Length: 178
Image 1: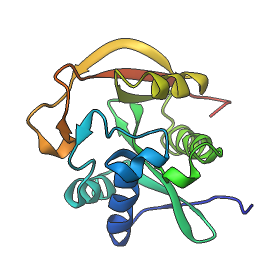
Image 2: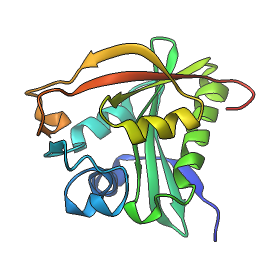
Image 3: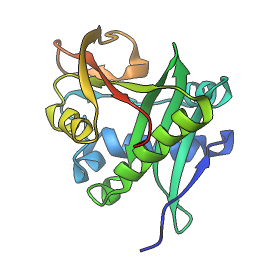
C-alpha cells in the first residue's frame, strides 16, 4: 500500500471535493461507508461557493489526501476565535475503516498546531451521531457540553429528515501528540 500524500486544495479541486464529500455523507452511495448521514439528511452537504470561500479565506485551508494520485479524503481546517476548527471531513466510502481518516486528522492537527500555533482543535458533530462522536473521542476529543442549533431552513446544510438535530462541540488539546 502506498502512503498518503497531502496537499492544499485549489479552486480546480472543487468538483472532486463536492463528489467526495457527497459520496461520504449523502444518498445510497454513502451507505457503503459508516459515515453516512443519509438517514437524517437529504440534499447537499457542500457547495462550490462554500468550498471556494474556505479556500480563499485567511488562515483556512482544505487539506487533500491522495493515494496513487487518487483523492481519498479531505478536511477543512481554519483559525476560528483562537482555536483550530476541523470540518468538511470526508473519506471515500471505499477507503473508510483503513486508517485514512486517522492520518488526515493527524495532518490537520499538525497543521493547526505547527503553522498557526493554536492550542486546541474544535469541531461540531450532529449530536445523534453517536458512532462518529465515539470515533473522535478515541482520538482524544472530548465533549465540551456546548450545543449549537442545527440551521433548519438553510439548504446549504442539507434537508433534515428529523426535527431534533443539533450540533455538539468537541475539542482536543494539541501539542506533542498533534
